[in-house]
Structures are given as C-alpha cells and as structure tokens.
Length: 425
Image (cartoon, rainbow, N blue to C red):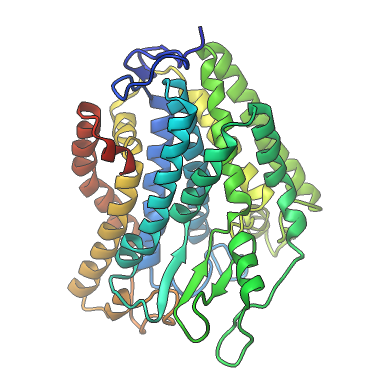
C-alpha cells in the first residue's frame, strides 16, 4: 500500500491511499517539510527587514563583492535559500494533496483557481503592503515569488496528467538548460531618453530576462519583472515530482534524500569550481581569501541560475533527510507553526517589517518618507535614513515573535476547520 510516512513524529492524522475517496478531513502534515518551510519563511523576513531598515538597503546589492563586507553579504546570501525552497515546496504540497486522495481533476481545478488568486494577490494586496501607497499611476509593483507560484500552479494543473517521469524530465531540463538562454538580451529601459521595451522584449523579460516593462505603454505605470517564469515553473514542477518520494517508507526516503541532497550540493561545488556553465557571473580570485570565497558563493538569483538552484535545493534535501522522523524540540515546533501557514505568514511579514521600520525611524528621529514611496522606483532614501545591521536583526527577531501568536491561531483554525477558502490563504 502506498502511503504518506506514518511515523507519529513526522505526520499527524492517518494517511490514506492515493486512490481513496478524497475528503478534506483526511489531511496529514509532514512535520519535516513544515519545519523547513517555516525556517525559510522566517529567514525571508530577515531579507525584507533589511530592505526596509538598513541604511544601505536600497543603495547596492549586498552580494556585490566589490562593495560588500562579510556580515552584510551573508545576511543577504542566507536568504537566497528562501525563494527556491518556497517555490519547490509549493509543488511538493500539490503532490501531497494527490497522496491524500484528491482526484487529479479536482486537484487540477484547484491549482488553476489558486494560481489565479495568487496572481491577483501580487497586483493588489501585496503591491499595497510592500509600498504602503496606492500610487498605481507610477508603479504596478513587482512580479515576485507569489506571482511565479501562481503561474507555476496554472501550468502544473496540466502537467499532472503526464507520467511522473515526463514531469521529472521536463522540469530538470528547464532547470539545467535555461542558462543557455543567458546570451539572449532584449531592449531594456535605463532611464529617460533610453529605448523602451516593445511587446517582444517585454514578453522575454516576463519569461527569462528580468527588467522593467510598461504594460500600458510608456510613460505609463512601470512593472518590474523580478521572477521570470523560466526556470521557476520548472522548480515548482520538480517539487511536485519530489513529493513522490513520500510514498516510500521513512528509512528508504531518508537515505534517498541524503544521497540526492549530497549529489546536488557536491555538483554545485564542482560546477562552480569549473566556472564554465551554470551561472552568468563567473567567480574570480579576489584580493583576499574571504573575498574569493564570497565571489564563489555570489551566484545569480535573477533569474535563478542552475548553480543558484543547486546551491539552495541540495542543502534543503539534506535538511529534510536529517529531520526525517526525528522528534521535534520546542524551537523546532515554533518553526513548524510558521510552516503550516506560509501564505498567511508571507502577507503579514510585509506589514510587520514595514511598520517596524517606520516606527523605529520615527522614534529615532530619522527620515521615513521614503517608506511610503514606490521603493525601488523612487530613487535612494534621504541622507540619514535607516539603521545598521544590528537594528535589522533586532527588528527581525521582534517581528517574527510578534507574528507567532497570529500564526499559531490561524494554524489552529486550519487544523479544526475545513472551509474551502482556508485552502487559499
């Protein structure tokens, strides 16, 4: 009988066979997956806190080896694990619904409707809580992780009818081969007087090359495509296929997770060392050992290169292998709570980090007007804005602590009730 892992330390509620009639009451939680998701959600909050709070948050890329320093670099680098794992586990979660008995037709319809809902959220609720304004005349916002998960789910709604091996082949091919497209560049808008991307160039930016587009024509409102569909759709589809490992018993699954995670992580080290393929930004020897190490780790996120995805997803699988079937301590249980309400947490953390940045700035008598502008579109903050990394970490921990009671409350609601709308938040 194929089943979700039945160890009581890993899964709550009795699992069902994939062919059993689906009922929303037959829901099992895989604690190791929730734990990983919760950890990366909290780390994601660190990145957004840095964006709003750090005095250099809008001035340069913290992974720019020529300008950064180790603590700032790693404050940003550790958050690189968040988006790939978040997207990957969104696909895994879809497979878990199938394991619990949801028919493919019903799952396909759900993926389409939830995907559309997530895209709508990106342009409405998220745009407002990121910028704290309604200035749509200047900026429509960013195409970020929620947008790309939405499109990934819509595409996955059709892919789930294919044999699993075909989904594996398609997703792995997209992830491994997309860097061959790095040499294709289209018109990019670089400021007043520069060429404006046309329809074809704008479409390519949505598909693979991040950049600014003007959906309604220049000088209409701008839209920054940060998360192109390639290869993110492949990452979500790979996560769906990955969910099939949870048909195995705990021992076999742990061994396979360890081998797969080790192979991907080692593969990253070897490919990065060779410096021939997998990332558009090759590493180079710097003025010191530390700077050279930073250059080695500074792989490209926009779009996520093959090496970026190997660097993040390999260790994620090792994490799952390590915590598979283990008892959870109190701290781990806190992260499990966050991981059970990912979208709820994601929405609230934008509000909390933004609000804490404004409150801290006003208490300290610093300029805060920029926190109500279209950050990323409105130029650098006023001199004297923001704080050092120490305050970033203080406000990050405070923000995560403030969210815990709310997340625990909502996780309790989702565990007790089975209203259809709970699957959309």
